[in-house]
Amino acid sequence: MFIFILKKIRNTIIAIGTIIRSIYLVGLQALNKRETILYPDKDIYLSDKFRGKIVLTRNNDGTERCVACGLCAVVCPVNCIFLQKNEDDNGRWYPKIFQINMARCIFCGFCEEACPTLAIQLTKDFELSSYNRNNLLYKKHNLLVSNTGKYHNYNFYQKSGLLKTNKCNLKCKNKLVDTKSLLP
Image (tube, rainbow, N blue to C red; front, side, top):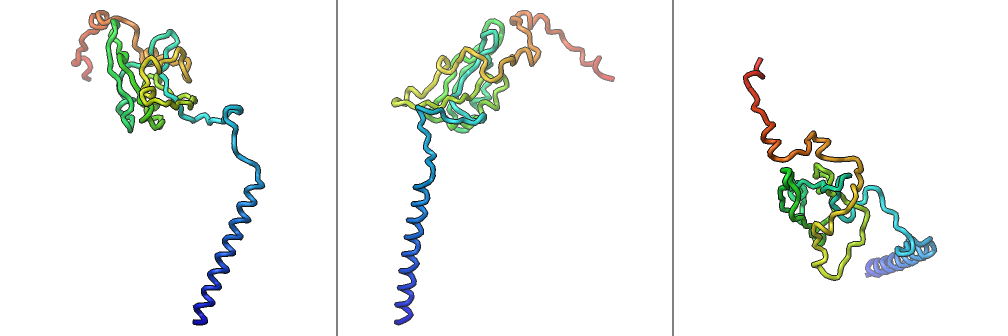
């Protein structure tokens, strides 16, 4: 019985000690400098790798960079990207419909990495809240910007070696390759 009382006294002393220690640590933190940033008044530091709002960029000549290859939609882990391709008079693909459901987007950046034309880019804009969920479905006209984004001197067709010609010229200029002349 005496041992039982000693254990109770010991546990009570330990409990009071932890309470006093907690009060001391909270008091120390109360005296430290605050880390709160008054956001609207002061700018928030965003690192260079910050991934925010998604945009579709254009080339220097004003044409859309996106060729509707669909790689961004395939690589998206939450399937928030939907696009439907169309073909213009020159035989080039472009997205007829391009939609991103920002309510589902997790801003992983996979779509930006998968894009071969550097058309889809994540900017530092983070103010994307809305009171209506329907406003978070961004369509092509919401995503297209009038500049080149991060990569100013990049043009997919110049880098890949494709010239601007129409379909007829492409079909007429293609010559059959003699495979037997390639043999040793």
